Length: 115
Image (spheres, rainbow, N blue to C red):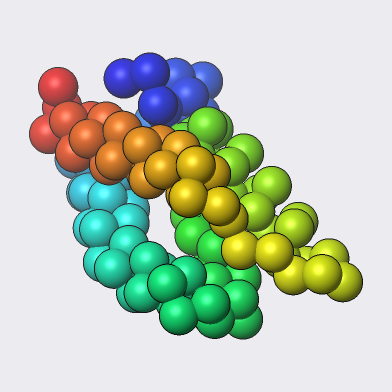
């Protein structure tokens, strides 16, 4: 599971039972799945306010389970969106975010099933 920080998962497992941790990871994966289409739509419409709010919320979610690469990409995007010249991601940047998003979801899916 290259997208998930093993140390973060180990920390979570110290205070969560295995079934509870798997359920938590499944909830995070579901939240990412549900958030993608609205986020992509807001980006397509050029709605930087919705993108910024969604990215901020999701950044804390993915950070809590150790999706470090996706967290870093969302953090950089949020920083740009908070600047005076709010800049939505380019197509290349969006493709990188989408790739990290999909990889994180896949790893979360596997981890939530104990694989």
